[in-house]
Length: 282
Image (cartoon, rainbow, N blue to C red):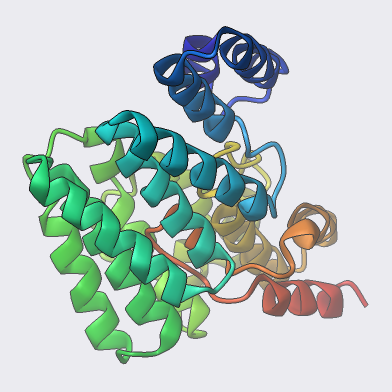
């Protein structure tokens, strides 16, 4: 059940959430710490059925840290800190997120887990962008430095398209047009980037057509970010139906920073996007 929950992450079937709940119930009954930790990973993976669930993920991460620390489950203790890093970032609590990043780094160094540093480097780039610690050029440089750490890290699913997406979010958050470099590889994020790229090229009709083909975002860590990108494009082309959909989808996350729950990037406060969407519906 836990394996089904983990492997079906991001989907829209009810099978994944059901499997996560079932795995957690069984693991708690069996009182097996390792099994419960794995089941909680499944619970985390299935906690994206809608926007605004950072508090729920934060609670899962807290339990995972406590459980793993008691029983010497290092990999799950690291995971718990990364989950809380993401959740606290989404909630704009960077002081707490910093503590979890430091704890994850310590565990990574002590137990020779170099990939931990890849995630914390991305988090620190996100923090610079979100808190205004760096201007746009500085934030872009931080993202590029973090992306360089992905080279050879063995995470192609994370590597492809992530840097262009982060730079797009940085520009959109600051009211600037999308990057239009022809050599940018948007990877799996191309459908959400394309309308904004076309708008930056003054191809409004094509952007409107591209927006009509954009799918609903996967139910994962980038759910809010991709809905915000969809919403910005919809506002620009006056697509009232998509504006309404984006507003409804984002409403539960009004207290969060868009995209920051990924621990990778952000488009600023969801509340600001919601205000712009509401204004565009008038």
